[in-house]
Amino acid sequence: MDELNIQEKNIDPTKQDFGDYLDKINLGFKEQEVQEKAKSLNIPYVLISEIAINPDLYYIIDKEDAEIGKLVAFYEYGKKLKIAVSDINREQTKNIIKKINDKGYITEIYLATEEGIKSAQKPYYSEKYLKKKKDRLNISEKDSSYEAEIENLGSLKTKILNTTAEKSLDLLHAGSLKTNASDIHLQPLSELSALVRFRIDGKLMDIFEIPYKVFDQITKRIKYLSHLKLNISNYPQDGKYSFEVNNRKIDVRVSTLPSSYGESLVMRILDPVKSLLNFEALGFEQKIVERLELNLNKPHGLVLVTGPTGSGKTTTLYSMLHYLNTSDKKIITLEDPIEYQLKGITQSQINLENNYNFDTGLKAILRQDPNIVMVGEIRDLSTAETASQAALTGHIVLSTLHTNSAIETIPRLVNMGVPSFMIAPSLNVIIAQRLVRKVCSCATEREPNDYEKQYLNTVIKNLTERGHKIPDINKIKSIAGCELCSNTGYKGQTSIIEILDINEDIKEMILNNEPSKNILKESYKNGFINMKESGVIKIVQGVTTFNEVWRVA
Image 1 (cartoon, rainbow, N blue to C red):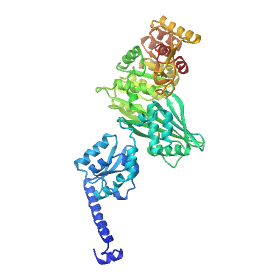
Image 2: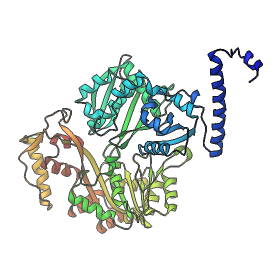
Image 3: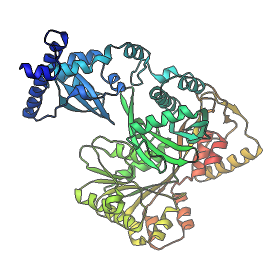
Image 4: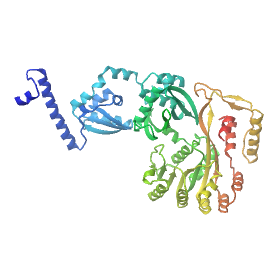
C-alpha cells in the first residue's frame, strides 16, 4: 500500500478508519478468491453484501439452521429458493439444504464469502425479527396452525384487520381449509370496501367485508406470490402459487379481472388429498362402483364423465387414474390446466400459443406407447374421433364432455360429427353426475310435507318396480346449523350419479341410429338409475335434503 494511494483516498494511517480501509481491501481479496473458487466448482457466485434481501425470507430458514449451515436465503421465486453458502462441501450445510428441499423448495446454490453471509444474517438478531418470530404461527406445523386459531369465520375478520398482508393471506388459506372451500373470491365493492366470499360445498357465500386498504395489500401479496405483474390492473392475469399445511403442499390457482373499483380475484384451492379419493368417498353406491371398475378393467374403450362446470368431473377422473395407476401400466394425461400432480403418471399441459391443443396433444400422446390416456375434455370433432380411434386400438381413454345427462352424450357425439360406427364399438360407459351438499351432524329429522311425500313415494315405487330395494321413507333430514358447519347446515359434498353401461344391445341400437328414448328404455332394463332417482336414494339414506337434490337435479 503506497503513501500516494492513502492520501488520494484521504485515509489517515494514525486513525481507526485506516484499519477499516485495510479490512475492505482484505475483504475484496476474499471476494475475488471465492469468485474464482465458484468458477472452478461450476456454481454461481453472489456478492451477498450487495443484495437487498426481502425480510420474509428470514422466516423460511430458521436462525439456528442458517448459523449451522453458514448460509442465507436471498431470493424466492415460487418454490424456487436461491441460497448463498460459504462452503458447499460442509456436511452441516448439505444437511440443512436437504431439510429445506424436504419442505418442497427447489434450491439453487450460490457461493459467497463467510463474512458476507454473516453480515446478511444480522436481521436474525434484530428485536423486530425475534418479536415477529414469537408471534408468527406457521400453517405448516401440525400442532399449532391458523386453522386451530380460527374459532369461526367471524373471528377470521377480526384477525385479518389487525395483522400484516402476509399473515392475512395465511388466515384466508386457513379459513378456506377449515370450511372446505374450493375457491376464495376477493371482490371490490367500492372505493372503501371489498367483499370476501368462499365457495363452500359448491355454493358461493358472503363471509365479510374488509376495508379497501386491507384488500389492496392482500391483493398485492397474492400477485407477488403468483408472479403476476404488480403494476398491471387493466387486463386479466392468471398465475399460481402454493403453501404448506400439515406437511402437504396446497396449490392455489389465481385469476384476476379488471372491475370498476380495482381487480377482482378468484383463488382456486387445489388440495391433492381431494384428488386421491376412492369411489366410495365420492359418494358412489356399491353397485355403481362394481360396474365402473368392471368397465375400467376392460382392455380398451372410452370412459366418459359428463356434467356442467363444478359437478366434480375432474375429481372423478383423478380417482379413476388413482385406481388404474399400477406399475405395469403407462398413463399419460393431457390437461388444461394440470390441477393436481399425480405420482407415477406423465401429465402434459395444453399450450394453445404453440398450437398444442387437445387434438394435437392426443395424437402426440398415442406415439408414446401408453396403456391409458386421460384427455381433459373433448371439445371438437377431431379430438372426439382421435379418442374413439385410440379406444378401438387397445387403449383405455378417459375424458369429459359437457352434457346434462348420460343419455344425451350419444346424440352429442353424433352432432359433433362422430360416425355411429365409431361411437358404438369404442364406448364402454358414460357417467353423468352432480354434487349435492351433505347434511352436517347437527341436522334434525322431520316428516316430509304432502308434496315431498308424493314425489318421494312415486320415485321409490318406480325403483322398486324395476327391482331396486328401496325402503319406505317416513322421516327426512332438515338442516339446523352449528359452529362445525359455520351455521350453513351442510358439511361436505357427495355425488349423485347415473351410469350408462354400453352393452352389446345398446351398441347395436347406436349403430342403427335409434332414438335416445329407446336406448334409455333399454338401459332401465339393465338396472340404470337416473340422477333424480340417485338423489332420492341419498335423501332416503339421510345423506342430504330434499331441497338440496331439488336444487341440483
